[in-house]
Length: 365
Ligand code: F6P
Image (tube, rainbow, N blue to C red; front, side, top):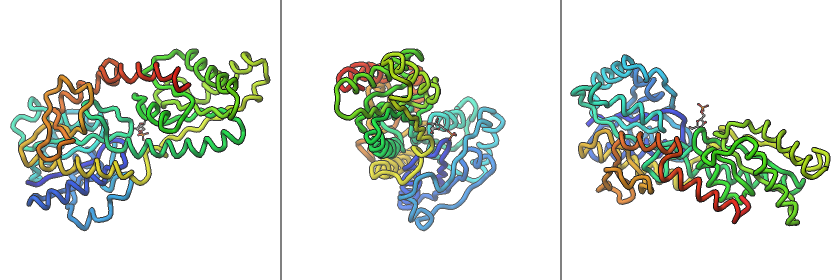
């Protein structure tokens, strides 16, 4: 088979591990790996390049993606997808691996839609990659572990200066529609509280939650530092939240607003870059391996999933015969479940919100 691989959407640490594994496994099985530069946009323009052991020899340690990536809103247009299908057929591609997040996997779903594609001969398999961990039917996506480690390292550093000055820090972390990174890194960094969109708090409730945490920390004595992690997906901007918190703290304590010092740190794209953790290298390698073997076994319109979580109970996925921790989940099921997850309706979304509700009292989160 000629197996093409592309990385699309926001880059994620571990994408290179997937590219490397797909390349070397394809070669070992007698297939021909082909890279596509710049995701779906490059695909439409026929940006193919051969992949061999040399071209992927040193990529495992790097963040980002050596194939580069792009967001491609043009892919919503069927004419653009028709072009992409024609380009793939003309290049003699038999299988396509799409490494990316919700939007990219949706692109893969549309590209391979039987109604649109007819008897198009290319088989498509997805690998979930998104630091937000916002893809359903997989416990983890590529890049999440590295991003979490980056946030924890940043919070450890911020905690030093927060302790030194008895300050309150609002630390904003990436996560457009999903608060997973905020929630897990709050636990892993020992933050005092976490704000995430799934809790559905009003602006006033957000402010109150921060203020209550600050007052509780002050009351218990010891270090006066407060680290509050806020997901990017919370609508109230961090600077606005800080202003509202300052005002309310001053009103509650009767002290001047500058007495309790608050600061905002927006980690932004720092969270998405950097050398992949050992786990992301492993995850990318295992998923790349399974994706190639699945294509060779005839899989089509599937996504490689890592140990499906509780929202996978009704899905029709199958455990991969090549790796007991990987499952092949139908792309259609993945994207329907992802929609429910992001709307806060899936069992997993509800569980995440409930567990943090309980934790708030226990850990002062
Ligand atoms: O890839 C996911 C993500 O990092 C989100 O957390 C963030 O909101 C978004 O991408 C940023 O996208 P861009 O880099 O295109 O601005």
